[in-house]
Amino acid sequence: PHYRSWPSVSFLVDGIQLLFEEYQDCELEDEDQREHFMPFGSIEDSQFLAVNIKRKDCPVYMWEHENGKFYKLSASLDDFIGDYLHDEEGVNEERDDEEEE
Image (cartoon, rainbow, N blue to C red; front, side):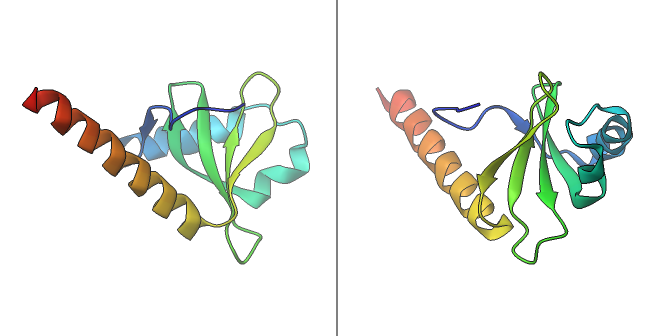
């Protein structure tokens, strides 16, 4: 899956417990991968973001509910955070420009 911009992602602490519970029940394409990933953000109620905790650089993936596959989004957690914050700043700047008009 490809997005032009970041989809709506929730990092709310209240939802993390539910996300972990759902992760234990979700169908993965490769069940051996379950211990490699730790979910940390939900996307629009049906997908989630996860970090590969078996890799030192902690790459970030999105789990796709349609096929149970993980798709790599960022080479590292640091890269993901930088990209996400950069995109959020751009969105906020666009909103500020619209309000001024």
